[in-house]
Length: 68
Image (cartoon, one colour):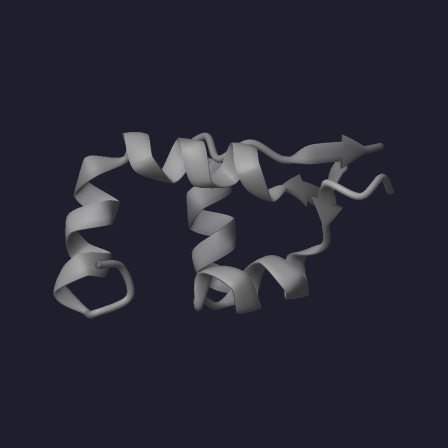
């Protein structure tokens, strides 16, 4: 992995979400880096850009206090 790529555990910590939430985000189109058939890495910059486009997710996370 290069410096920009992080694994699922690191992304969970960075975003404050569970593995199940990451799975739901991937199903909604969250960018991931696939090696074979699995998403095993993420570009944090790209993930954060994608999250900003997901206004319903962003509003929900704001209500819970995860995003200011």
